Image (cartoon, rainbow, N blue to C red):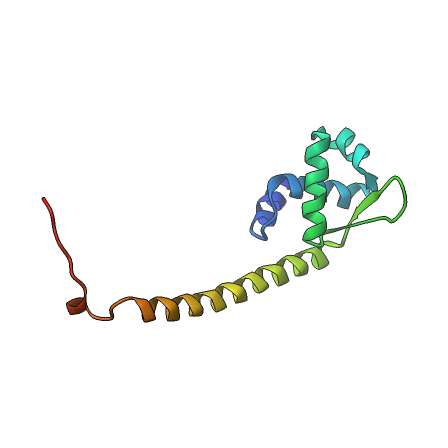
Amino acid sequence: MEKTVVERLRTFGINEMEASLYLTLLNNGEETAGELVDVTRIARADVYKTLNGLLEKAMIEESATRPTKYCAVPIEAALDAAVMKQAYHLRQMERSKQELVELVNRQVPTGPSEAAFTVSK
C-alpha cells in the first residue's frame, strides 16, 4: 500500500523522500529529526532538508519547544495545501504566458513574407 500512496503523493508535487517522512510522521505521531533518522535510516542532513520542504508545503508542523518535534498535518489538509500551491503556480504561468505572448508578438514579424529565411547546403 505504501508504494501506491507514495506514487499518488508524487502527483501532488511531493518527492519520494518527502512522502516517506510524511507517512512516517502520519503513522508515528510526533518525532524529532533524530528520531526520524533512526526510524527511516535517512541521513540526518537529508532529513532536515526534507523536513524543510514539507514545512514549506504545509504538510507538517513543528513545535516551538526544544528539541523540535515534527508532526504530520491530516492528509486531507496536506493535499488541500498542495492543490492550492499548484493552483497558485498555474495562475502565475497563465499570467506569464499572456505577458510572453504579448512581448513576442511585438518583437516578431507576424507574417511569413516579413521573415527572411535562407537555406544553406
